[in-house]
Image (cartoon, rainbow, N blue to C red; front, side, top):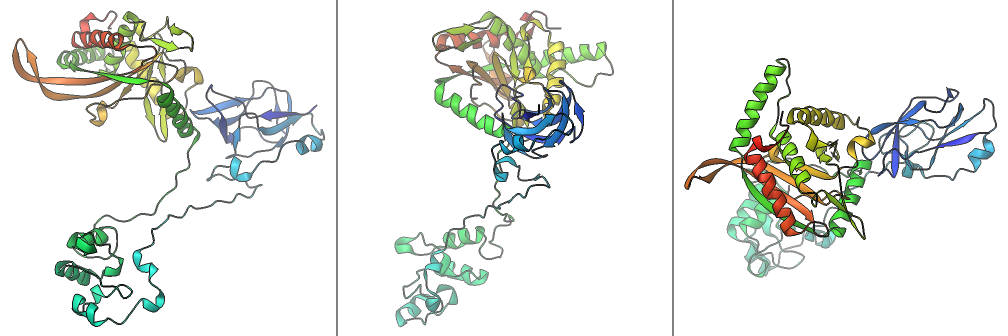
Amino acid sequence: MAKIQEMTQLSPTMEEGTIVKWLKKEGDSISPGDIIAEVETDKAVMEMEAYDSGVILKIIEGEGSKLKVGQAMAVIGKPGEDVASLLAGIPATSPNQNKTETTPTPTKEVEIQTAKPVVPEPVATAISQKESNPKPSPQSKDQTSGSPANANRGGLRVLASPLAKSIAIENGVDLHTVIGTGPEGRITKKDVLDTLNQGSGTSQYASKTATRADEVVTLNGMRKTIAKRLTESKQNLPHFYLNVDVNAKAMETFRLELSEFQKHLDPELQMKVSLNDIIVKATATALRLHPKVNASFQGDSILQFGRVDVGIAVSLDGGLLTPVIRNADGKSILEISKEVKELAKRARDRKLKPEEFSGGTFTISNLGMYGISRFTAIINEPESGILAVGSVEDKPVVENGAVVAGRVLSLTLSCDHRVIDGAVGAEFLRTLKSLLEQPSLMAGVI
């Protein structure tokens, strides 16, 4: 008996998927476990398996179709089996609902609508066509001095400073379209220049920036999930923030020494240890020493994780993922360095499996490479904390009672106050600061 192949939930947070490519075609025989299609989820492009044996009798939705989990994709059955009644029972869906805007299937007509930017109507459009070139009254003639750049506005005087009128005449700006901000609505030089910078008129005063049309960017599955989950986190979790500055001189020296040792082990190795690798190891060690931070709110209880699985936020085109370093507290910095780079590359290639980017117990977000001094991050539920890492900067520090030039790293811990109290978060940051300022304290650094 023929069966429907539905859009399968390929990741824990997946609500819909887009068919990127069919790997099987109508008439192909399949067995359970065969890969039949590639599907883009909210996290990655993943392979979809068949769960039934038979032949693909009908592909209902083509490449580019965006389907909710559980919606029909294809019909699988015996060769020659009549599936008309089965197809008739499948609810009809709107092409616009299920298709991406760029990949319509040839068998279905897709209407693509281009959003038109809304342009505010200038004040001058309120003047009727009949009044567009009114004859100046004696009163208005005195005000405008006969200047075409300063005619009356539908019988009303247009007040403008001499310099504003001069600039308007030079650049062909109709003062009827300029909103005056001076006394009694008088048009000033700044008002005319602001109009020029908005694209009205051309001259030495005009903005050199090329104008561009408004663009409507459709949210992909990943962006939708990020928007939903972070909104829920910010609304539901009582965030508070703790900040600490770390003297990074010892950490930078340690990184250089470790990179040299790494090069000694493998002269062909191109990937060097980064400061972030050291921060991951130190954070994992601090989490093991402070289990109250490595925890999750469970409604009527708090779960303190026995494992330390650290997620690393990785920026992607159109979103971000958090590949997870499992048991990070038990791994060396060199092991962490290698794993972080491999997972980050696969994340950017959209090749991660669900188990590689879910189930973390704590997250690190590092924007230091972008020159960001410090920032606050939103907690990734169901975790209770996230560490925001800024850049290492030249700042004065106190050493042995004297102020000297130093290298300072800013860390900000976002805490779920239902789980982590201020003193608990502060103790965690104090331990983390000590580990980073004295890297040799970390066990298993190599």
